[in-house]
Length: 139
Image (cartoon, rainbow, N blue to C red; front, side, top):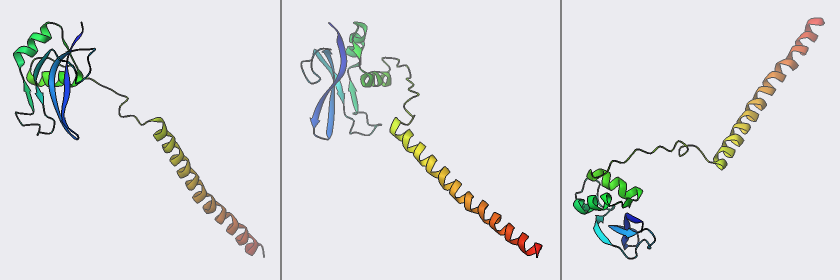
């Protein structure tokens, strides 16, 4: 049986409140739990001591027995000093998506066309004036 340490949502709409629970991985998020370890209230300021309330002895026991924490719970356990969470790196997160790249290419093409259009009359105008100056010099 796969055991997870995860968050079970409580609270009302747009006012989340979570219970840190031990549950079978196959059970629903807010379904049957084996044990309740504490609570997490994300609405409180980060420096508030009541933001995360956790029974560290029981959490350590369940970690020793092989319970797997979810990513968010792993962060909470790392903050409590029970677990060392490895830093994760997603280099593709900061890259723009396909549509954004298309928009950038279109914008760059439009800017290039505008530069060419602005440069073309500037080049043609002196060329027209130069023959007129030659005609006056020839007379």
